[in-house]
Length: 424
Image 1 (cartoon, rainbow, N blue to C red):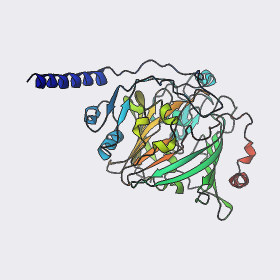
Image 2: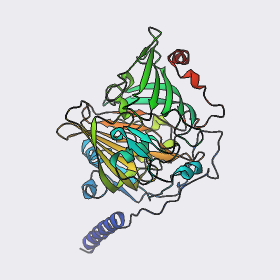
Image 3: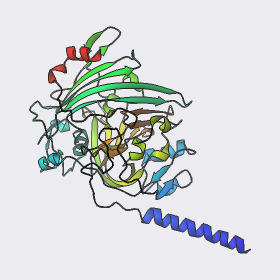
Image 4: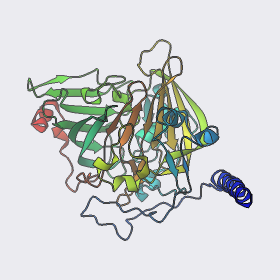
């Protein structure tokens, strides 16, 4: 009898303490940006040691308790992940660490809001700044994400993976060079966001193998210019359809062109609504993920959740709903932007009946040698096919991305003829 009473006491005590701790004790602290490399950082490697390696898991959300957090902490996409993969999906919640930073030069240029033009498809303001330090509209948050600091002259390579329900994996890899004009270190009088050339290095004969994109600061007045090089025909052709819901061959139908880097390109097909600032659990300070070999991360239905860190984060939530007279295969989209770094951390897509289609995560770290916060990959979980795509992967076992080359790119190379040379 005594043992039964003791057992019941322990159950009641543990459960009540658990509920009080994880709901009432979790807090978002003041910002403490990491503005320079930490002591054990080695610039000769592609390792970004975890500044918070001593942090312990506060609590774990899984199939047994996720219903407690639907209203307070979770997004609809996260709830769907628990429902779809109840035996494997979980979220380890850690203390919140508001570590994101940008170069001091960006802060010095940031004094007032930029100005939207052409119904939000264009922007004028102080180049190199945070365009909307005092955002008040939905598209302010979208532009802050698009024009967040991401380096200047960039070179790098990254793999991509598509994992099927039978655990088979499609692997690909690519290489890219880019010039980012919205930065504080280069005077921009071109009216451009940037220029990008990319090529697929594996498999070698993948369609749309090489691409050149020139992106303006006003998609309405100066639409995106794009060209593709086909290795089979060895010809370059204009590609005006590489925008909106065009699906590159490499994505196998899982993501659209305007989902690259969260969201990019013209905004005219949606009505945009700012839902408000919320506190939600987001993939954040994902150093453990970055420092783990990719082969260990790829499990059957989603990446191995033991390597992901979730924190309570202030996010600005934006809703995009397809206009009645426009076409796009993603009728409804909900985006969650980090208040501190302006990165999109999560996106959810919904069909015409507002049934969820996909959940997307962008776990960030502070690349503190810059400093800047960017995602270590883009993960898209498609609920209909139960496949997921991992793209723009940055990891300890991939050559390091160079964000500010000592020798700038030759701008004259970013032409159709230059694309042909780059592709070879």
